[in-house]
Image 1 (cartoon, one colour):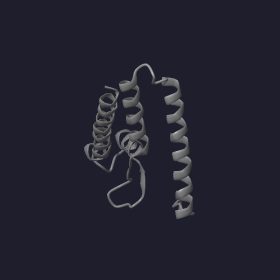
Image 2 (spheres, rainbow, N blue to C red):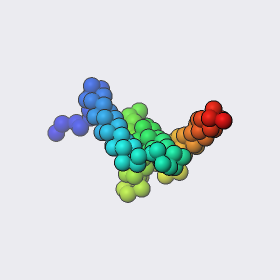
Image 3 (cartoon, rainbow, N blue to C red):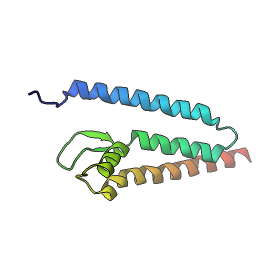
Length: 115
């Protein structure tokens, strides 16, 4: 029986393919939203989606391999999770908080510049 462990080069290719697919889905969502009408809600949704797609987290406490945090959270919730769901949600909550903070600052500066 062969080990199913990926080499470093294979892991890098998997991440490249994942990021290309996530970016394509994000761009499609941005195009479908047509965010000119509802600026705050559209940009907020796109930023949250980007944070959800691009936040990595460790697969387990013992492993050094990483995967998207929402996928690890989903697998732990659906299966016999090795990690606490609250621990897994921390990077996602942190990126959402930072995203809203950054968006609020940017939109505030944009509104201030228009006056």
